[in-house]
Amino acid sequence: MKKFIAILLALTMIFALAACGKSAETAETETITVVLDWTPNTNHTGIFVAQAKGYFEEAGLKVEVVQPPEDGAVTLVASGKAQFGVSFQDSLAPAFAGDEPIPVTAVAAVIQHNTSGIVSRAGEGMDRPKGLEGKKYATWDMDVEKATIRDVMTADGGDFELVELIPSTVTDEVSALKSKSVDAIWIFYGWAGVACEVAGLDIDYFDFADIDPVFDYYTPVIIGGNAWMEENPDAAKAFISALSKGYTYAVENPKEAADILMEAAPELKANTELVYASQEYLAKEYIADAARWGEFDGERWAAFFNWLNENNLMEEKVAPDFGFTNSYLPE
Image (cartoon, rainbow, N blue to C red; front, side):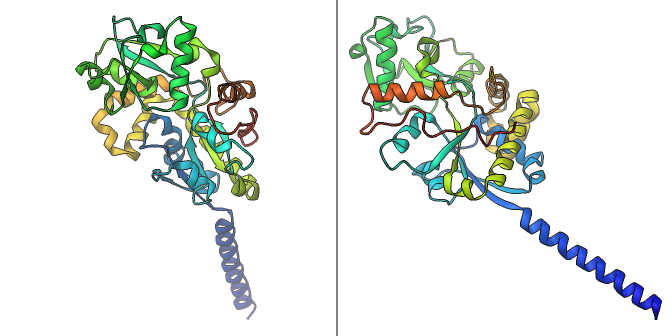
């Protein structure tokens, strides 16, 4: 009888522990949706690395990565349908302007410096802003875009009014430049610039941030929904910490990180050489001269918003120091 009771007690304890373990696991696992800004590319590598290497799982998180709807990641995150997303400081500005800003916050800088600028065919004089005079520029017809080019041209002694603005239909910068349908295109060098290199196309390029530091704003960034982060600060920090591990891995292991990205997005395997080259380029840009991945410099953030305000590029002003935080980054 004593042996039977001992066995019964032991079994009871085993089932109780198993139930507790299952309950604890359920309680600790947080489901998070991350919405991209575009189709998967090397800006997103750290997200897929964190997923593949188990960094999210180690942090007690189940993460789903989705592509954006037509109205973009900001709307989805603000509505609470996604907890985090990928966006850009310049496109966030209108969302933050006025008395009722959209309830999202930039919580990590994916790339430390703005790597965008103007690409053109080599030797045609567009290696500097003034050289755009009389040339065909593929424009999105956006106020901030045109004001940026006007500013750098004016600083270089050029006249923006002499630029021939062509509505942009560019989906392949290499083909567009080779065909001479346009002369100059605004690109992000980490993808389109590297694509020109891989294709063997001789190009000239100038970087906006090199001409005026005010254009060294943050693009892209990770945004989080304010309400969800306030209610789940530990999960938010765990997510950003796992993401930091993912991007740090990509810095230290660009080829392996590129392989992980292509496994997650097999369509990229059609451009394997470009993916590897882009990953190698961005490995130097994710952290660059910052103390840690994801960190924002408040002065740089504010400088760009001040420029927008001073040039009246939005209907309502945006507070220069609004919309970002470093508080969710790992120490």
